[in-house]
Length: 403
Image 1 (cartoon, rainbow, N blue to C red):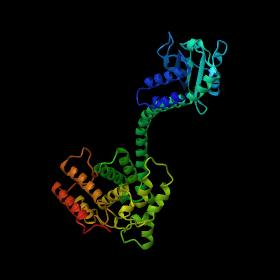
Image 2 (tube, rainbow, N blue to C red):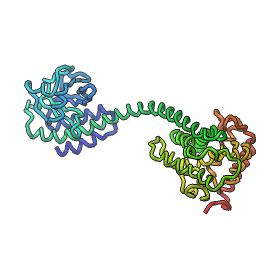
Image 3 (cartoon, rainbow, N blue to C red):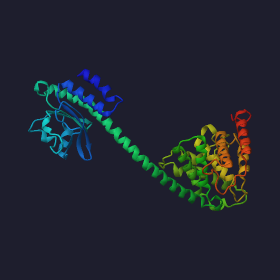
Image 4 (cartoon, rainbow, N blue to C red):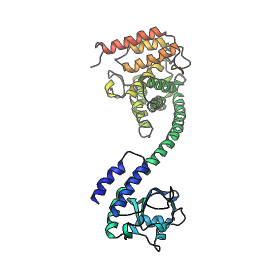
């Protein structure tokens, strides 16, 4: 028994095809109790059925033996230990409706993980036609525990593969659902002010494009898009007249605008999004690299990359959009201003990603343009290259590095 247990672990965990593992496992069990015939069945509950995954010694045995089970059989197997089988008792555990005769078996070993039935070892005749006795049943009970774990792991991996395939299809539709839903939220947020129309959707678009340029995964890019859509959700509580005010804001009004970050965070922090970074994007997209932002005056190393990306996307759209208190900047003017403020205010790697995307627009290399359709890319590729070199120099020269 000790030798079998020592051999059983490597057999069950071996990285090879499951049929080979099942056959080797069954062979070890049969050898331990001196069985000449045996079969290993796996249990499925929809419908309730035993299906053979290995068999040995029987003169006539189908490639896959199946034994349908009634509820009483499932209950009996789930509550029993190793049992001798006779012509008078086999009906308590097995049905005769399958393609194998249960009368072939002399002993059954229900395989369970906890109270859950996962399979059955069915043994036929022993050497010299000896009977299975208490000693064999005790050994089979111990071995059955480990064989049951092996079957359970196989079943889980099989169902996991199927679930992954199903979930990937569901995830695609779920992401589309989220995207359409958050798109609607973004439109609702921007209705507070005609000057904000489309702002949240553009920030989501720009943030996703910056993530792609940096090399983020599709899931991370989807999270950036969603964060851009929702970054200003706290503005739904800001008085509408503030957005259309052409004069400078009073301190009370400016505080109300600043509070949109913390109020937005309160709105979204309890929502179970597929993208956990959304609450921090909503709260910190106005933080700046030198700690001059709000609401928590965090520095660049205290906020995550998604937050820094949305901060640049938000600023780009704000600069290139008309506001009640100022006209819009051109793309070239906005890029020059962002470069001037980097790295004091913005992450150089994110600004470089922005310049990469704008340059691709300038030379026609983007299959889908990065900039909004209403914007004219009025900057040539050599000028973008010059700005990129400036960002690189400022970020590496040491004169502008933050301390």
